[in-house]
Image (cartoon, rainbow, N blue to C red):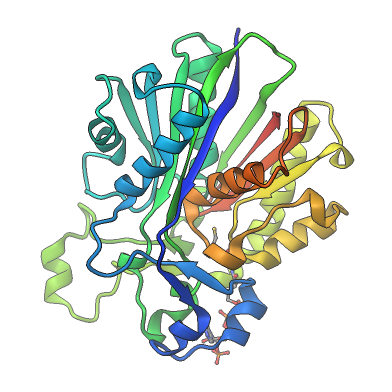
Length: 333
Ligand SMILES: CC(C)(COP(=O)(O)OP(=O)(O)OC[C@H]1O[C@@H](n2cnc3c(N)ncnc32)[C@H](O)[C@@H]1OP(=O)(O)O)[C@@H](O)C(=O)NCCC(=O)NCCS
């Protein structure tokens, strides 16, 4: 069995900064409410009229990650793309990456696990590497949320939270079992699927139905915020402990916890529960909002660039989101 190591990281966020103040001109909200409840000060939203999409942002992040891995696009032998905001209903964004990066005709898989998407994608890639099937896998998380949000007062409970952006990692084969991805743990609880969802359009609820009923807003995200919050704090804690225990590690051995950037209050709750110092937890939701499948990989890339993730460090990734799904990855860097 091989081990997989992250050998390259990259991220891309649109230049267009949307502050809480900007949002208060579109809907009845204010900076104080947003910061107090979520910690978010600003987010990046793709500029109107721009051609940027989840796939194109994914390409930009991927180019950086591949270069930092010291590889070329032709060294990549599989693509895993996580997003809830794909460019097309089908095919998925993975094949678009293959085309846009002018890659060999390698396999491309899309993962639809929302906020847990990046860890699910990483876990899939890890299994392919461990078994020897592939050597270098490109794992991407990218989201174009802003085009699908209700930016009126009606949608304010959701739309102020989400941001656009992409991150990518190259996962490579290693024969050093003391370093790399030590474990991943994945969970789901589909009975709560409707607590955080975009229901339409779907085959069950297709476009003509939507057009015939102007009151039908099931194409906008719906979130039962309080219920999501309560479940998130429990599942984040559980899945972090599950990952640590599987490796006979304890909380105080964590060098860097990178939680999915759902809400600063959720991250702070987890930090307090595990009695972690500020330098043991990385948060950037203040700048980018919740970028769903991209959030962990953007945060990991940024933390690495800032020298906060170093060789030998114990890095723990954890996520919770729509599905519900939740997951963790324990990595010896
Ligand atoms: C969304 C969230 C911030 C809302 O916070 P909350 O304290 O639960 O707030 P509520 O939804 O109960 O709303 C409280 C009030 O604020 C109002 N409100 C909602 N959004 C608002 C906004 N953007 N600006 C101002 N007021 C807002 C509500 O209408 C409500 O008003 P009312 O009391 O007059 O009815 C919070 O529930 C949360 O963070 N949940 C988890 C979300 C999450 O992590 N999602 C991603 C999962 S991966």
